[in-house]
Length: 149
View: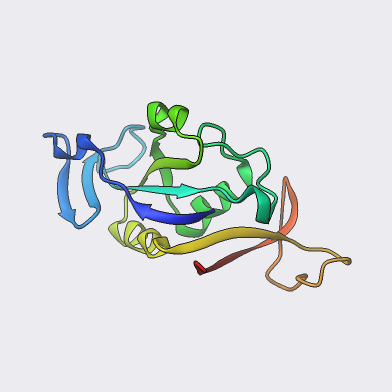
């Protein structure tokens, strides 16, 4: 995943969203799981990298579990809007709104703007095998966050 950018949807200009700081808004929890009933949200656009990191099946309307779930886990956020209309009409760019009860987690997520995020398989035949590898449903892997080239 690369080319992370801020995305500001028109809905953020409505009465249901309170701007807290650049790119971060406060709104009602769409899933009613946060005790306060309110969440902090931010929207980002990004692109998958099928030719580089094995995200072959990736499309804006069908993002593969790996590395997307790693992104959610790494920054302790959840998806609050999938922007289905945008993602169905885009061939390359994905749009997602992320939420958290913690503004700090949203701030940390926004540090990914301008970076690349991907998963590297680990194993005996892979020189990238190291102690940072995690096992999940997709197998052993580690995540990498780096500046865009």
